[in-house]
Length: 399
Image: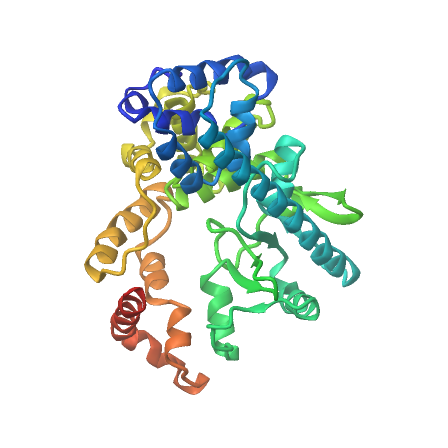
């Protein structure tokens, strides 16, 4: 168990969830087993543990980690629940794999390059098993200039925008592509696919070098672009930072990458400095030390001192928090300030103008008020009114 005062203050069930939120390679298996035995020896509340597994979406990973500890006693009711969740996760992984292969074949046929983000392919790349890492949707990135063609391919396969979304006008689409980085599609089975044209930290309008460093690879007879390991850790660390490392499974991905030696951390940090992602990457490494007890790569002390404590402390707080969607405007506004602070600290080069521009845009406004393109300008002054309108509607639906 990591010698972390933060972790020791948490419950045995939480410590067990952290210990089983990833599957350690052979070189680190003894450390993981020790952490599991220490947590289970402290009177684990198994109902709490199963709830945490659900909250952090680690059912198959957690069950696999528990099963390989010799002589470990898990109560029968907990065993049945964990087995049921693990099997459902594996079935979902197989379903997602088949759906992803179908989409990749269509994109291959149209000559559209595609890069998989997270999902069953990341599970396969990290663990050799598409069903170990749970994902609720599929994520694919395509070049922005091929976005229209890609949406046509998805439409032919039965994928469409969510039914509660109003069709976007040309001006709304242009604004969406400028301010956002992905849009979600659903199919008849209820599965979701997020089509990305850039990553959260990519500067709008500036091409990323991620595509140039990627390499083609075959997967289930389909060609897909594979991110360079450096770009993978930058993407995962930035994604985690964007969402405050709210899910333990995201940090588990980084722990797996760290312990199998997939990434050259010095090269990754050099690239991170060039793209203004060094704070998010360094904060991710500090979290790996605090949560999983993994060694920090050598870096000058001033580099570590450059990481604002808030980035680590806020993430540790988010890891322990309950998962709930608030409908209170006061709470939503209260959470907005830490979100802005997180973005500004993680990426210091981002300007306040860019932050306010992102706050002034919400695609949900287009669904609420259907204005023609000639009146598109009216969305900006109406933004506060539309926000309050959505809050009222959300509270009514929650009753």
